[in-house]
Image (cartoon, rainbow, N blue to C red; front, side):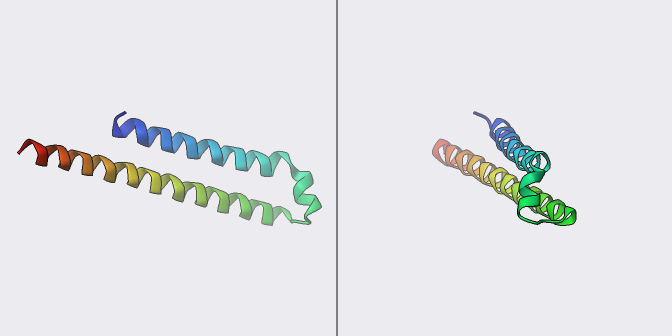
Length: 80
């Protein structure tokens, strides 16, 4: 699997998690009402969820890039 495929998988996976979190917060307003959250607090929670998922996606992409660089350097060192 190439680095671009890994990054794409990581981004798509985290995007799916973000969509699920947002759908949960939007589709289940009864939960928000039951916990006595105001509309602005729900929006704030959605934004926090986006930030967390974005940070996870960035970390996964960075880890995939570092792994590819290390693999390439090992391959080049082995060829010498």
